[in-house]
Image 1 (cartoon, helix red, strand yellow):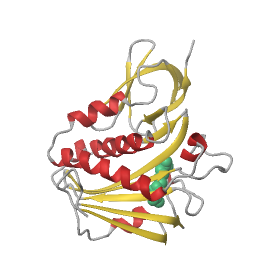
Image 2: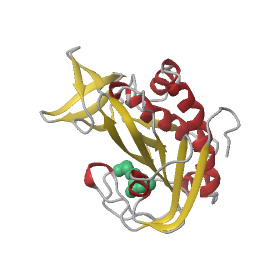
Image 3: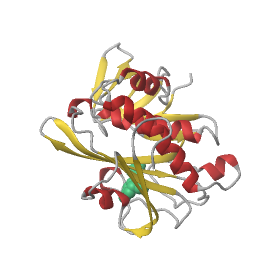
Image 4: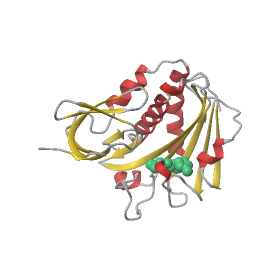
Length: 253
Ligand code: BTN
């Protein structure tokens, strides 16, 4: 299918069951600029940091997107993640409010996690050869297991109605294609600015935890390679890679 708003060709595939849509696309030979595969059920759904991703069958949007941005520098690779986070955030806003991007690429709604993303790039030298961006959006699931690392929510919990997972995936991908076109044209600034404007807790005094303990600080910005910069109460900037810092909560007093 040709994307309405860009010259990119998209191909969609839906599987009733697969191990993981990310795994499905890892060695897939694309016949379009962007290949999308979704699944009703994953037997080995994967999350960040080697976690498993479990979802009730058919209730959530589980899909991965493959792009081969061969001339995209690996050092600018984070912009792909930013583009997907924005596409998901904007789509969720059709249904719910108070949606934010929690660095690096989780989506939070009313302070709870509504979407997680697992990006797996295959670098070719200094370039992003293949990028698989896998997303799990909680759509119609309303009961979640205890003990999840982040308190979960879903569109149905926040919106009070069931929605079509296919429609959501379609809307996300349409938006992503527009951003992807900009990335292909090496124009990153709009994406980076929008990402900053939509960051969870940015500019708000908050409690964080790093390897040395808890501290109070304010998120300043994200560097082009994805590092997060937080300014602490001594006005020192602290720079973190993914998983080197945890958000505890907003510090309201
Ligand atoms: C996380 O928050 O830990 C990331 C979760 C990513 C889940 C999605 S579901 C579709 C794709 N396939 C997977 O195995 N994982 C991602």
